[in-house]
Image 1 (cartoon, one colour):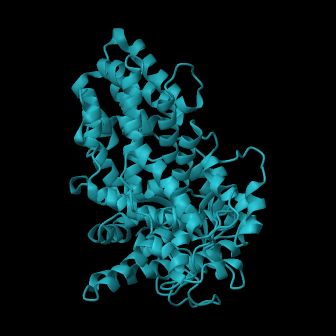
Image 2 (cartoon, helix red, strand yellow):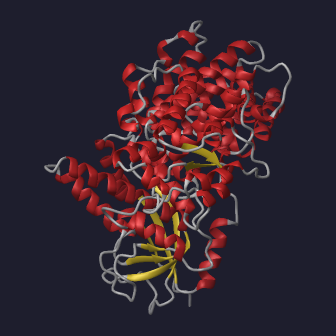
Length: 588
């Protein structure tokens, strides 16, 4: 007799609590989410929690189904919720690890807030609740105390324990981006920490409470691995869920007159064929282009259809803007004669950024390209500048989207003087903030530090660097942790001076992962031959010339290279960075 599958709907705060302790079995793949998936999850949570706009807050957020295996269950039905048990994660590992990392980041930031204001008890209470999600205070099994709510493989678990589970002082992050078992966890943690840092204290607390109490999953518990595997197969491989684009397509085509249905279908199918898996992403951008960010995608597109009528919507909105979106994504890869180099450079740089805030503006600019290429090129240069500066300000996704709102509106309205409009303004205070962030950009946002150096290389060479950002890493020439007996310690005896030099943009070199791994904490004369080695497919970078031509690497060398990099940054993005590098009396 089939006794049923124990199934329960749980808020996240209950999932990561007694009696649930989790382990990832050996047959599971390693944690593999990137900043794209983890960043999208965080953006979705920020929107659902109403951080950008309270009117768009969702009453709850469903995070899908989790399949757990409980091979030691002695009876059917739900587990005893009073005693801890260890469950194997069959489906849901990527989401669960990402949620653990996010909870740890929010907890650590709440701890800092509580220290800054000892009278504030709310941060401490929230941090303690987040901590219980990350780590089990008692286990009740043969597992060591506080190994974490979820236990991964050896290499991943060591990093998760030291940099996520542990609370308070912890070892510094590895300075090498070379591949390790925990690379994905480290990169996602750094990305989420940067995004959380951009939120206000109140926003962080609101997000934490929403995550814990209003985000939920459906948990299915199986007693044997075969049944668990069949469940996984059914949920992940069989059947095709009805997507938002399918719902919208049905509604749009249903309202088209019979004599125009063939042409309407052709417009829709062509757009879908051109964009492929990015078609739904495009529909989200289409909603933002028309200032309907407060509405969900389906409701937003429905409103556009009502405003324009189905036929005009397909001919004047969907079709041309889908083509423009495709061009934005693929233009940098096409070598076309007569194309303004500024346009190509801006689009290459924008696509490296990867986020969505700049895309609606870029779609509108590219839609103008055929009949006004000069204006389109100038607009794209401004969009790239604005998008880059917002990231150097370390603004979160929601704030960046809000800042792009007036830009999108001005371009869509065809404002004649849009290039000279105040919508692009970066205030003096914001310029000072950017200058401050540039002093230790790699610590604040390692990914942005790499992209900034790549963009400087573009300018020095006079054309975009044709290499995937994932193929390059950032190496600290003066290491973050030089050996006690190293030459570095004798050259940089003052701790404050050494720390400033280590963080300086002038101390960062773009190298391959293999070079990074080999150079690590070596002395400068040992690093130079490694930097100079040519690797297959890796170009020699002009931005590294000052390093490669140096006979030593002292504070003056770092400052001189920083000044050169700042000069390029100031010119490209029209910033006033004069005098923002560390004082000479400190660096010398």
